Amino acid sequence: MTQIVAIVTLTKEKVGGGAPIFIVDREEDLQKTSFSLEKILDANAHDLKNGTMILVKHT
Image (cartoon, rainbow, N blue to C red; front, side, top):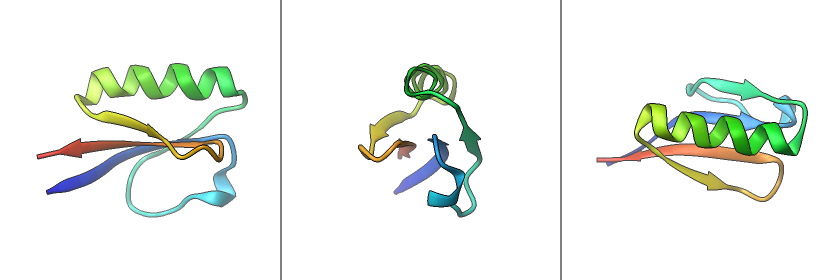
């Protein structure tokens, strides 16, 4: 089973749902926050190429 455990985005209007959403101001912060959460949550970060990254846990 695959679960989205977090979303990191530059634009909060583009996302929604039940996962925690982290809103950042710059592309650099998007990368840094995503990769930090990737390690903390033991998940995989996936760049959607639209200013949003999702962190997914594969079980």
